[in-house]
Image 1 (tube, protein in one colour):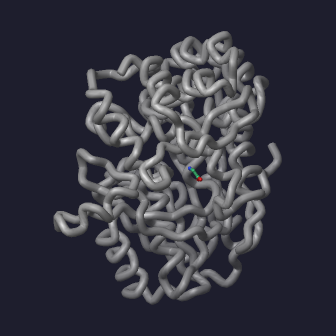
Image 2 (cartoon, protein in one colour):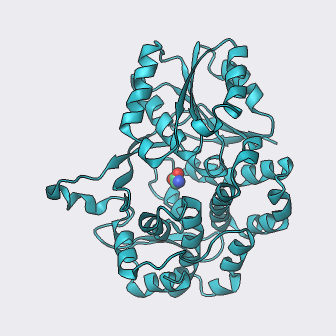
Image 3 (cartoon, rainbow, N blue to C red):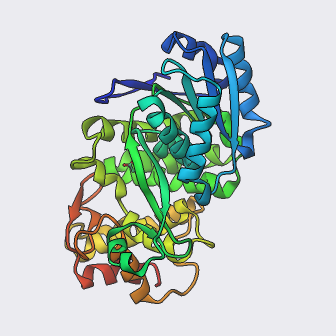
Amino acid sequence: MQAISVQSAHGNYDIQVGDALLQSVGAVIAQKIPKARVAVLVVDQAIELTWAREVAASLQAAGLRVVTHVVHASEDNKSIAQVEKVWRLLLAERVQRSDVLCAMGGGIVGDMAAFAASTYMRGIATVMIPTTLLAMVDAAIGGKTAVNLPLSSDPLDAGHSKNLSTNLSTNLAKNMAGTICAPAWVASDVRTLTTLSTREFRCGLAECVKHALLVDASMLAWLETHREGLRAMDPARLVELVHRSASVKAAIVSRDEREQGERAHLNLGHTFAHAIESLLHDQVHHGEAVSIGLVAMAAASQAAGWWPDADKFQLSKRLTDLGLPVRMPAKVDREQLKNAMKLDKKGQSGAVRLVLLKGLGRPGVLDAASEQVINAGLDAIGS
Ligand code: GLY
């Protein structure tokens, strides 16, 4: 399967998708970043003793000195304190601008580690090695790096918090500090998906459905046709899934790296999803909230008159067939949900901004959604 090429102002890069890539990471880095002498491997604790060992061995075999830093993947650890630990390690190990940091794990570790790499000595090369489906098709592509910031407990700052994407339960302003900095390479080895929980795999599928809706009906049809192969973790099917879905995001970020327009379409369903996550973060994972948010999005698109026959598309049924949730898992006060939607950073001056569909493959942005449109979305998910 061909590499996917991503255009970036910092230099174009490739996404390689395969089922035996980890053993060749060192050789590819030696060829792409020939001056590197040290490879810092920042890795999710969950794969430290398994997949990370293959990568470390391959880096060593390519003549690189390997320094490993293990992180427990939690939103609390997507923090400037963790970044400082990485910076200090890089300094202590005398890492030079010509060296490389490999960020291995899901979105949390990837975003945090890539932020550290993009700022240490004003930026060293990063190689993304995503090991969750969600990271392979979304987080590891497009160069966004980030950490969360704690929400201020100072009441004088309360007004300031209004425009932030907040997680009300954890008191974190998500992704508030970060950079857009293209990686040198993205290596997605689908074997790592075989050790993911079914729940986390399905979370990634929700982002694949989102990408499918942004293009046309063919990818959703493909997902439905190959449901069994995906469930059985057939490597060829997994490679194709990641390749197809990552290609959608790669094309969008190649056209609009800095989110001046089209990249915002990747937030399809996400204003609803972020609100659900912020209120039910202990019950709902991101991909599950995205799945529920997509159902709300379809109903809101119909109510706005954008997608008149959205109901005929039966998105809820299609998501349920993929094992994804489509309704709120617990009763939440509707006004609280609406307030959380207004707090989402995509909203301008208190208005709720929604990415909706005018039909399959035809996304657009509704800047100030009416109560009627928002209520239609919330009705559809049983809030
Ligand atoms: N996940 C949305 C973006 O990368 O823009």
